Image 1: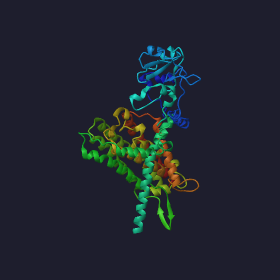
Image 2: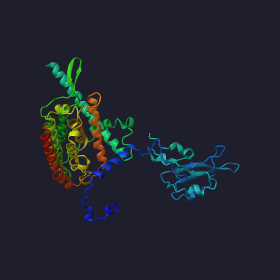
Image 3: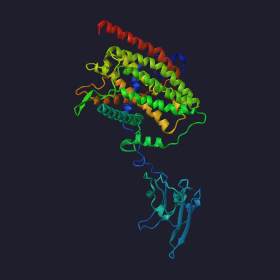
Image 4: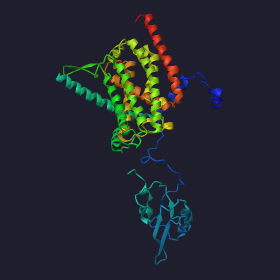
Length: 158
Length: 328
């Protein structure tokens, strides 16, 4: 009987004489839904867990001493398909290299994750921060200080 | 005389404020219940669980831009929402909230007037209220508006009849047109037991009169882009909305009065029973809206004329026979 309802045959579309029970069934269904818990996630206060492989804002990792792991080799800037990374290297007397300037334009970035893959020192990674908002374009140009702690830029509803 | 006037003015103010509060918060109930039926929360952010949402909406309504279309019939366009809300609020006058109570040695009735023809007044004024929608649709110079208004007219004419037939059956049982007498006649047994068919008929026709969802022909969102109020904005739109919800409150009050025994209830009689029943009916209105899809226009018409009207006449015949046989 249930299958027959879907056949587009005009003779099957005549009233079957069943009016009351379908109406009551429908009312019962909606009432059941009314008393069950909403599935809404109340976004800024509670949020859905994202995948471990999520590609969000970049993070420049630091080692145990609090120094940047990055040696400013420039591979990430080279491989970046949208040319969002700018690096100015700086070499100390002992031969240790640091990035003097490490700027990522988050508006250019397409979050492909190539920089993370290319990095030989595991110094850059993509965090799970996906909702960062601001008022000006300049605010999306992230320098070293901003990149060290991307979790600071999670949207909090303010 | 002065005392009488003072009491009357205070009573009018209280009834008006209570009615408008119920109207405002029935929008909240509507959005909340619809939300929960669809497994959402509904309004949540403004106040505790969105309790201040109606006030925020009202403020927003005042500050929105007023638009009057160039090809609108301006006087009628301005008049239509006023007719709508005026008729709807006038209906609150006859709603019997409760019986007499004594405050400070004075006997005060918990209703504004006890008209001898109360229920007739309801039918008459609710028809006038439908002019608001019709004129609004007609005067806004918009095809959708006109079609919505025309549908509203046709539907109003069709369902007003069956509604009146349902009321007649109740009047036959109660023996009076006054709403107070109708309530008092249900002290032992509510009319829903005496008149189950009339109750069903009244609910269906009332929903059609309210333009609520299975019968919302005048403002079918999908086909008419909101129908008669398509060109209205700002507070004028809000007035139409308030009129609609005010009608819903009056409908709930009428169902309570005519069928559910008004302020009578187990234990102590009083207005709390009235408000509880009104709330249940308003909840039902939202509940059925969330359940049923809109009927097709020709189906609405044929349902009204071919099923409900004969059903109402048959019910009156049955009531008459029953009263004749049992000699009531």
